[in-house]
Length: 272
Image 1: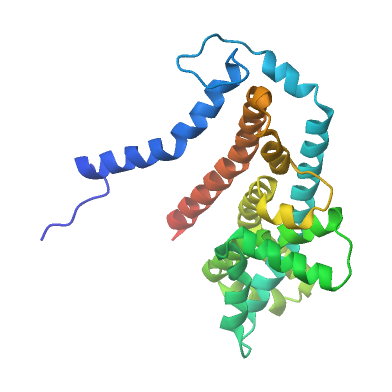
Image 2: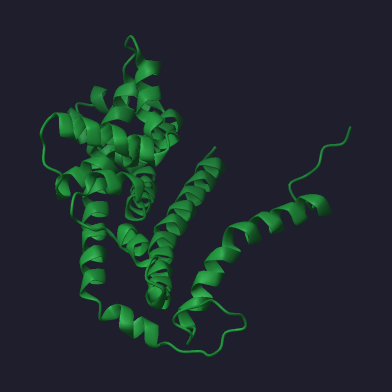
């Protein structure tokens, strides 16, 4: 039976299914973007009764919006840093060490991303409350870091598994200490995986709402701010503007993470 080459075209049904899936995922986002320019502040009508950009100016004047945006950016940044450190250490431990329960540890590390956010949020709230820890900015960071670690861990562990262990052994044999080996051998090999994982973790933390709801206390991150505005019909265009900003902020790191991962895979494939 002749095998198909990579240049063969996909079947009509497969192409149609792919287009349908893309439309299903992205048409709602396009609708949000479209209604950011409507002149009707209370209802959604189509075609648009008018076109205006005044809602972008109105959104930029909202101090509560800037507070929520600043808080979300701070939480996402610190959660990403924590995820990079913990995820890398966990990946190195699982890859380099053969200890009892290694598979169980790996499963527990991945579990938070598979659980619904509300389950993780309730569990964190119960644990933090039982320890009499007040719900503050840092509890938000802890909550977001729990599932951001998974993204970094998976990326770095996959890169470790494609990395030749003989490089580390050769570095140690040539007299390099652990820090020098990490800096000159390990870090260059896992650098793109760290960058891609960090970008994905940032995007994941920035638009997370469930865990924030159960750990934020009185503080409001950007997703919480958006949900609070949904009960105000006359603020819908402003809410659409903010949702568009969130989409753009999360789109960019995901896009570049995917691009970095693809280029890294192609370079590895070409070097073999």
